[in-house]
Structure formats: structure tokens, C-alpha cells
Amino acid sequence: MEEKNQSSLKEQQERRKRINRMKRGLISFIGIWMLICMFLCVFLMIKVNNLEKQISQLVSDSTVSKDVEETMSVNTSDGSDMLSYDSTENANDENATEPLIAGIINSVEMDSENLAQENDVLKVYLTFDDGPSDNTAAILDTLAQYNVKATFFVVGKTDDQSKEMYQRIINEGHTLGMHSYSHKYSVIYDSLNSFETDFYQIQEYLYDVTGRECNLYRFPGGSSNQVSNTDMTEFIKFLNEENVTYFDWNVSSGDATSQAYTADELVNNVLSDVVKYKTSVVLMHDSNTKGTTVEALGPMIEALQGMGAQILPIDESTTQVQHIKAETVE
Ligand code: ZN
Image 1: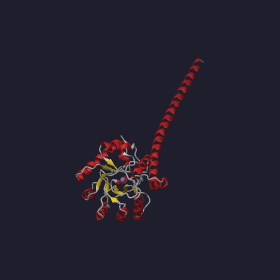
Image 2: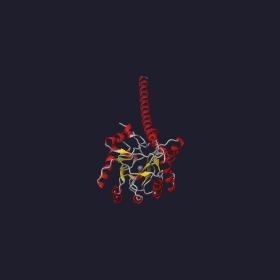
Image 3: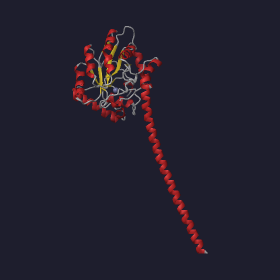
Image 4: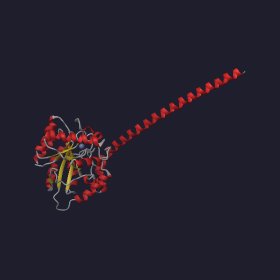
């Protein structure tokens, strides 16, 4: 009798142990699954966030930039430094920008001082981003034809033709500015460290090729871009320390918006805004796909000269046009 009782007690204990083991196994299995799910969720959230950013860039740039100007009836930064897709090696990360609220506020402030009065001689600075490209020579030829000097914000390209173009820009009296080495937003705006690395790379490279130290910069997407992972003021602080001046723009030709403007329309976009400012910095692009910009350049210069505007290359005396003002960053 006692033996029987003992063996059933043992059996019960064994069963309890088995059940406990199963419980523990189930709990750890569920726990691991929950962990995996959590990681997956975080990963997906980051992914979605990035995609949303990209979508908003694409949508906002083309439409917002011009629209904001019109609907707000103030002149804002027209962040259309976007999607100038270039088939060459480096310019494959050309992303969108849109005017940040801060950018708008700053440019409004700036614009109130910069608004043209009657009888002002308008100063117009034509700027070309993203070169050198297969169109650089044609742009330079046109500028030479009208004896007009402009500003080129270039990226790093190592082929012989590009090297020749950097040199031609300088030799022909234009201003050479930097526009990052890689033009890859995801890389240069990832951290201050990667921005610095890219900055020194383009500055040293241009020095090697041209023998000139370059102290002028244009942020890919402008200082008001909304693509940067890092606070733009970090980079501005760095440029201030390096004694490098950066320029944004207050007039956009619209040549990098998703809207395919004709050459005539590009000219009109520029003319309609240039009359508003004492100093206009005009955003255009020098890339393989921007044939219309080349086409528009001659008529644009003729029209600007026809209205008595001075067309000048950016130098130290140029009124700074910045979406986020450098002097506000300490
Ligand atoms: Zn660019």
C-alpha cells in the first residue's frame, strides 16, 4: 500500500517537473519571439520614416518651392536643388529640398533688406550647381560670348574632361565654389565627421587640380534642406570656423524641379523673381540632363542685360544670400 502511494507521488512529482519544464520552454519561446518582433518593428519604423522623408522631398520640392512663393506672397527660398539626376558617378544621390520654416523666416528677414527699390541697379549672380558635366563647356562658351562671369558650385569628378573644366572656370574669370565631393546626402549629412571628411576631400581635390584654395560653399539641397540627419547648424558652425562662406539662392530657375520647363519658361521664372531683389542669387544646374538650362542661358543673359541688371560672379563683397544665416550660428 505504502509502496503504491510512494510510486504515485513520484509519478506526480515527475509530471509536475515535466509541466514546469514545458512552461519554462514555452515562456522563453514566447519571450524570444516578442524580442524578434520588437526588433522587426523598430527596423520597419526606421525604414518607413526614411521612405516618408524621401516622399516628402519628392513631392514638396517640385510643387512647394514655387507654390510657397506665390501662395505666401513672400519670397522664400526655392529649394529646387533636387533630382538633377546625373548619370555620372557622383551625382546619383541628388535629393530634394524644401524650404524649412526657419529657412522661410530667415529669407523673409533677409529679403526685407534686399527688396529692390525704384532705380536700384539690380545685381544678379548666376550660379550653376553639380558640375562639371558634359554641358559645362557649352555654358562657359555662352558666358564668354556675352562676356559674363558666373559662379560654379562643383562636385568631385576625376575624369580628364572635368579636371579641364575646373581649370577653365577659373581661367575664364568665373568663381569656383564647392558643392561637396560626393553629393551623396546620406553620406555627407550623416554626421559632422562625415561632412568634414567630404568637405576636406573636395577642398583638397580642387586645390590639387587648380592650385587655388576654395572658400566658397553651397550645401547640396541648400542650408534649409530637410534631408540632413544632422542639425545643419553643426555644419554651418564648422564652415564658419573654416572661414568658408556659403551661399544659398533666392531665385530659382526651376531647372531641377520635376516640372519640365522649356527654356523660355526657365528665363521667365528667373526674370519674374530677379526684379524683386537688389541682389539675386539664381539657382541653375550644370549637369548632363540639363540641356534646357544651356539653351535658356543666352536669352536669359540678354533679357537681364536688357533690363540693366549687372551680372556678376560671387566674391567677398557679394551680399550673402542664406536660408539659414551663418551669423545666427555661433
Ligand atoms: Zn546639387
